[in-house]
Amino acid sequence: MKISAVNNFKYSNYGFYSSVKPKQSPSFSSLKLKNDENNYSDTCFYRDADTLDCAATLLKKTFPKGTDILDFASSNGEEAISLYSLIDKSNGKYKIYCFDTSDRAVELGKKGIYTVFYPMSYDYLLLPEFSMLDDSNTREIKSKFYSVMEETKNPSYEINDINYLCQLERSPYFKIKYYKLKDEHKDKIEINKGNINNIDKVLPNKKVGAVLFRNAMYIETGNFSANEFSFNEDLNINKKEIIEKIVDKVYEKLLPGGLFILGDIEKDHVYIADNHVNDKDKLFVSDYCTFIYKNSPLWEALSKDGRFEPVLYKNVDAPLILGKEQKVPTIWRKK
Ligand SMILES: C[S@@+](CC[C@H](N)C(=O)[O-])C[C@H]1O[C@@H](n2cnc3c(N)ncnc32)[C@H](O)[C@@H]1O
Image (cartoon, rainbow, N blue to C red; front, side):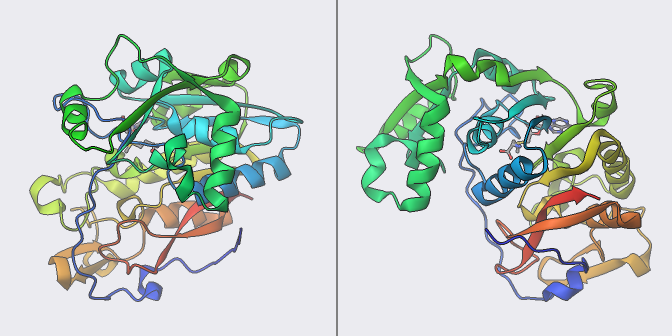
């Protein structure tokens, strides 16, 4: 896996005015909640596996004897299980503490049974039925998954939205399986309700090797995609201030060499300008008739005073403003 450090974070250096046409990404998810519940908790196993794999490699190298990991915005825990499975467990002691603000996601995570289904999910390749499609990467990920997970029975409680599953069942190719962590790994992943803004209150007097906050900074800042913003966005929210507070606290919580791990979706990195941004700090994006922060407030907060350095750049998922081939830094290391 290529790990590179790049030190210029301005969007404008990424070919900003590319005339990328709007693309509506379908919402695939193995955690599909009911309509009246928080519908931001979508997740799946091995979402952005490149970032998780690179993080696992760096963690093993930097903390060979193990370390604590804080996974904020963990949803039901599929992300933490994926990362845990990628860390070699033979010589290290790694424990992942998961936190999410959604009661429902935490409740499901605590119950500990997960679904993998086909169609309409990213992680269906984990199903043994699809092994004829496996390339070597998928085979490797699958073997990591089955090293920590085992099949179990359909539980009596509802995991996925039943109406949604009924629709999928109409496909002649519909498949679903239920999984749980093997007993020997159960105590390595703990799921509780929690908010990243209270990270300083978690594991008091202890610093950690990694903090994850993937695909959630946009929720915390109310930052929508360029094609969504005009309908929903509250422009009175001071996004820069919110981000700076979180980054400061994450910095304090990490050990030297510790990692801050972010999502690869554009709205976690590119911010629609709110009412607190000066004109000189805005850029107009004609494709979406909207202003954005000229420089990503997230990247600025992280690189301030050289506190963090980016160690992995990923092609952006679901690009609207940045072009398809453009990259976003998903792993930052505390110097
Ligand atoms: C889109 S899901 C992402 C789940 C997972 N990180 C992933 O990338 O697959 C976003 C999750 O962030 C949670 N969330 C939003 N703001 C949060 C905060 N301040 N602290 C902890 N969790 C938060 C939501 O409840 C939701 O479950």
